[in-house]
Length: 219
Image (cartoon, rainbow, N blue to C red; front, side):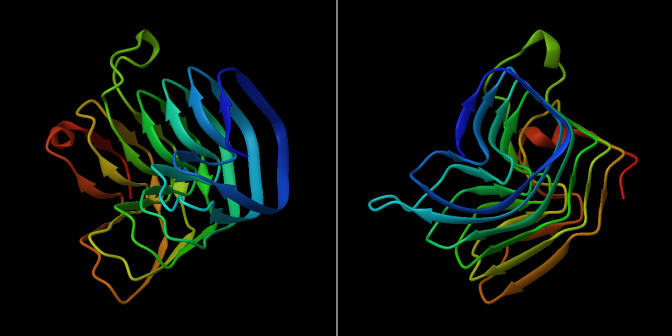
């Protein structure tokens, strides 16, 4: 868990399952931690992931059950079920599949799991937590982030959120060139106490640059 990955990974339709107790510090958290210029495809993750933060660390930048941070990469035909329990204090973006992403393609993927937390997060999304465009242009991803043919019908169970953006597909969009198409959302949101700032069936919040992003055929 938490591997930095710069290669191709074909799951060949297999499932990774089981219970995972993960002790991590700050940074990108997921089965794959940081994925760069890579392709991950044809994989199902059906696990209970319990996150515990090491002493002196209580924050994470991006957390996803499958990938912590996806940059200039492709994620195809991947599914996530199971549960991610965020036991200790954590302040970071959270996604069912991917915590953070930029200049990447996420295609034909789905989230049917559960994310539980008793802490504060700036964004929680079914497919991804957040995206940005600061990593520059890559010839294979010149149009920015692409999320296509994805769905989320999982659930978020969050206590004490404050200034949190909840999005069925992605929590926060900053990339002006992002294109989200042919996606659907039926995510269940169970929030107790606190005050979530925004909730969206598709996107929780669109940043100033993100207002130029494109959305097609989603529901």
